Structures are given as C-alpha cells and as structure tokens.
Length: 153
Ligand SMILES: [Fe+2]
Ligand SMILES: [Fe+2]
Image 1: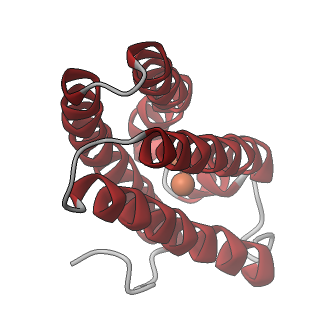
Image 2: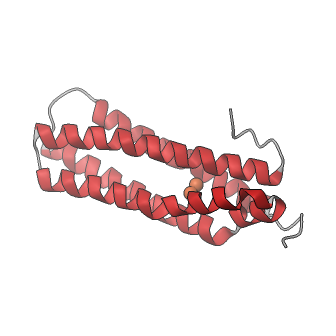
C-alpha cells in the first residue's frame, strides 16, 4: 500500500499542467476547423500537422499517467476507485485509435469539402470523449487524494 506521502506534488502538478496544455492544443485545432473558407491544401496540411502534434503529446501524456502511479495512488488511498480507474486507463488506446482514424480519413480525402466536414464532426466527437476522459481522471485524482485540487466544477 502506498504511503500517504508517496505522491510527488511536483510531478502531480506536471500532469495537471499537461491537461491544460492538451486543452490548449485541442482548442487551437477546433478554431482551425471553425475558420471561414473552403479547405485548401495548406489548411488540410496545417490540420494534419496539428493532429500529429496532438497525437505525440497525448501518447507521452498517457504513458506518463500509466507509469506515474498517480491513479494507482488514488486506488491505494481509496480502493473503491479501482473499477473507475481501470476503465479510465482502458480509454487511452481507444482515444489514440480514434485520433489516428480521424487523421487517416482526412489524409485520404485530401482537399475535399466532404472530407473536411467529416473530420470536423469527428473532431467534435473526439473532443467530447477526451473531455469526458480528463474529467473522470481529474475526479479520480481529486477523490483519491481527498483534496480539493480545483479540478472538478
Ligand atoms: Fe488519461
Ligand atoms: Fe490525462
């Protein structure tokens, strides 16, 4: 069982800062999709590159969460969180697959209005899934540490 002072607040703070950074990257992508005008080669390439960047960040972030033990710490502190944490971690590969599929379809569609609209709709679905994931994760951390980290509304 983890000791109560095992948590490194610096690293925990880093994970929480990463959540904010991911949110910023996703907000930029959302505004790029929302910008006026038809899809051009330049816009499609810019979106694909931003999606690639987001993917890299997400991959690192997920690995860090899986290795970092914060969620396990939450369980050690509050065993009833175990099923919720297991289901949160199972979302990681699914989210990466969803993002890869979205980017793959856009890349294959090239410069087409249908391909662009589809990617825009797909990104909104990804957005909701990702926000739901982070909300559940923040809630588990907050509950596990039994502290108000200011993460949940
Ligand atoms: Fe996560
Ligand atoms: Fe996270």
